[in-house]
Image (cartoon, rainbow, N blue to C red; front, side, top):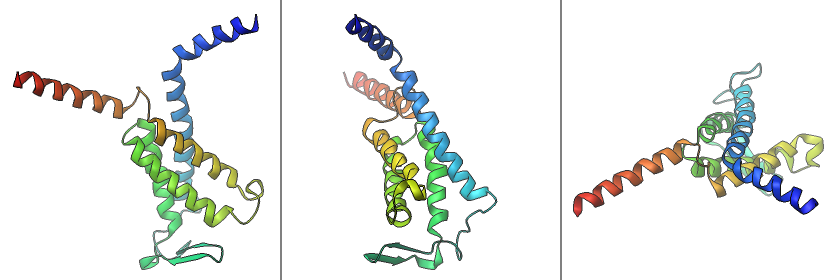
Length: 165
């Protein structure tokens, strides 16, 4: 009985994979975009240079002074906002997701490593790392610009092959 019920819901799940993946992408990216938007345009917007986080340090292990006093928080906010938009529409998903994963790892190491992540807000960073690692691994799905562009490239290749013969 439970096996049949599980199988029935499994069939429903298989039919809605593309829609579910799109919803997952929209929700994940929407949250990342809103976080980046707040960092760029909110009440305490990050400056490009000067104030903010002008050096990157991981405890006592690593310290890097950014050139021209660039604010790392501004750069991260641009990647969150712009990268979130690109993954949301499914454009260059693998590349942008990898960039976001690297930013999230850097964010976790510099801001959230010292204490338990639940006390300092690091759980969102850790969750975003895993989410965008999944997007990097599995891609945007069929309902995306990457998919449309890949289809067009394939059609052009077919047309070129047809012209040769």
